[in-house]
Length: 103
Image 1 (cartoon, helix red, strand yellow):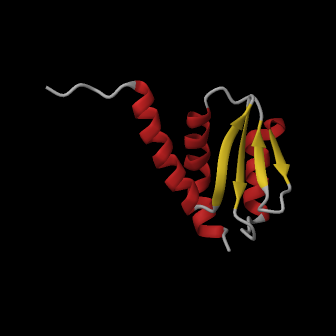
Image 2: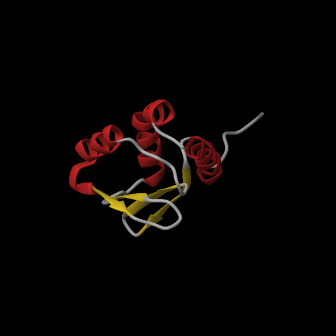
């Protein structure tokens, strides 16, 4: 009787879920620019040196930090599947950010 939703609809719901989770950990925006994924945190959001070091070790040369007046950000290079990348980022970072970082 009921069919599975089309892939674009599933991705829309997936993106909405990811956006809610990102917001809970201090992210004000996330988006793809060419083959890069950029994540910006709210102004004044504090990220511990331990978390920054962890990201640097995990993502290596594919990660750079972006200063911004509205809140600093991260840029991940060579991202082909941004929703997958955001889910991976959340999986490894969500607990760290909720427990050790924030305002």
